[in-house]
Length: 540
Ligand code: DC
Image (tube, rainbow, N blue to C red; front, side, top):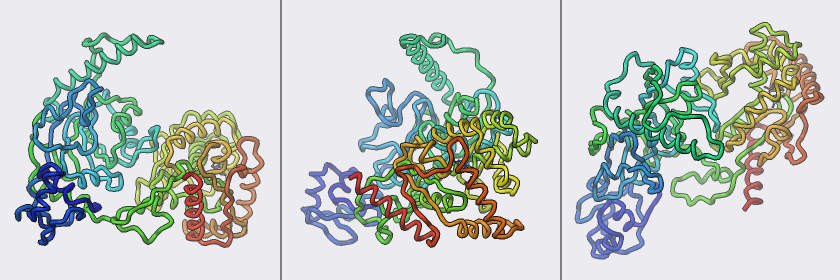
């Protein structure tokens, strides 16, 4: 954590008002690392410094860490306009506490409350990705295919979800009985609100059952799910997308903490061991990933460095011919920026794989087009540690190892030239791109998929150099080929991709051309960083 004024740290720890804390300092009652600090204006790092008032350490005594079992119908972040009570009705303590992370009003379970701002910030920072475990009651039963999709990830509007642990429970967990009434009340209340909104809405809406009169419940089942990310209503959106809306969501674990026997509406202080475990989970001095704003100042990564914030392009399109280094550069750039990396070529490859596997003739445009409209594709960051740079599921099946087979290399260009195929895939790509914070790589990203992309790059290299790079990749995969053969294949593919009728490979008028023929990967990355810097300076 960064340094803060001593009086602010004392006040945040609940010692007293800031004015009162200033009085304690000037009267010489405060020590920092065994030295009396009696001047105002001193700054300290509350995570590292041993701060004492009258010889008593402040952190140990005055930071509060509370675990609440939040019932349904309570807000985790107070909002007087929302018409719901919040957790402050249940936890009455003199300190000003904050909830760590969010837990939807409909959701129940473990909510961590604290006034330790440093720890709270780190716990909610996406960089740390600590596990959160939930019990989820869903309508109906997820079949093994859907369970697999949930484990690998699900494509939501704001990008794919990370891999999750998902376990189907064979009977309702003991927690199911607790809090059930409140959850049902909350559901009825929400159904009532939604019915009211539909009735008063301009277009009327589908007839909903009146408030309090719930429709007959469908059979339901329980899952235990562990996620390492926490997007808005993520779990509910995941199960809804699979056709099994959530009836209840109960958080039972947060990093090292477990809800255990704590009853709904009740709270307790964390033990010293639990606080230590939380701190160990998100250490104050962890370097973490370099943030985008460090990009042109690679040496200045210390946590105490004041950072200049420069705007960054939110959508970055990288187009170019085969083997020009788009995926290597795109992947690295996305990692540095902490953006989603999305290689659209794998979608065309996936459709080709499925067509080949199902015996659909590649020359049958209608049949391949229909397939592209019907197959459910999910593209994720790697879910298996086997050297892959992406995971692709087609209707829940992991087809990643098939994507780079020579048969697919040969058939993918004609498949990607079909109008229906392009329309089906472009739609999905656009949706993901529009959510922002994405590096999207392909042939028509800057021209067709995201013509309004903030930054467009066209990456090129001579045919010889590209063939050499691709040959090395093929050899590493154990494929028998020669550099000349690879060069010929690339030449044919580029020609096909550039001359097709729909969305041919071309340089967008506002794209920046980067030729990597005589550059190393690191040198291309340096150029990318320079482009980002220039982009940011123009926007300032
Ligand atoms: O980048 P790649 O080699 O994995 O792409 C496979 C094929 O998909 C390639 O021949 C061109 C096509 N493609 C496309 O037409 N449009 C895209 N946005 C991405 C790939």
